[in-house]
Length: 267
Image (cartoon, rainbow, N blue to C red; front, side, top):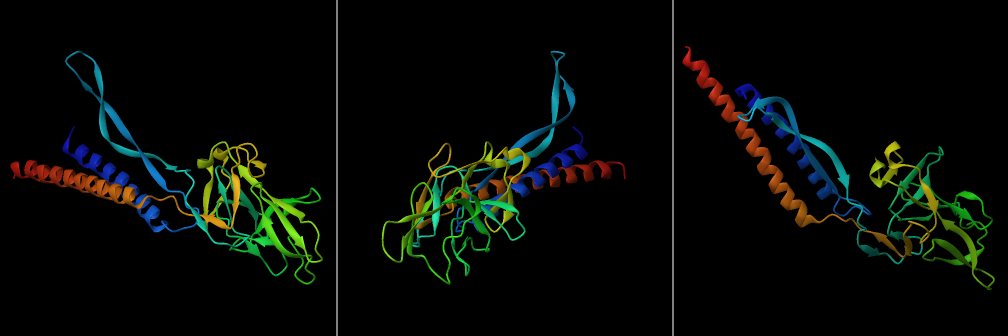
């Protein structure tokens, strides 16, 4: 391997570990983000050309490292109690489904929901939560009419069913059911910001269900999911990646000094 190749190899290491440090920083920055799922990097080697060995075999020549991809930790985060009836989390697999005013669909683990001025169940961005109404129709859920309330209280069970207590008394009535969507490959979801995801091609076809049915986890009311970031683990990773980054920069510096020595020999 020539000195110029050694420098190029070091550059690939700088690029790979620089990205790894960015991923760690992103995890740490979102340590308190609701329903955040931590990411980790997967490295791969690069080869180019071959060595000739004594056994007349050809051995691939390594020329550095690359980043194969970033994987998502789907472990459920801790339950953070809020006491609000409209705040929910999924204990297991699945995502809540929301729609913006343009009809675009997003998926989220952040169940910080509330009622807007029109009685619709919405997230913090004002996107309407999708579900199945009591009459069987699917779409954004309208819980009540604020101008003429039909219920004096609400509750959500583990299946994601929303019940209202009529203002005139009587048995609780089913208002609607939250949709819990699962995917064959959750890693295929694409981050959209604000705790939202959009469906990527690699995610597969969404399966819309309800809490506790099929692969969907049960719904817990009065709580939201916390971040699953392990700060201690991220700090250790940061130290390792920083050391690896420094080592690669040293290899570039060493190769540069050796190249200068060769050049000076002919002066």
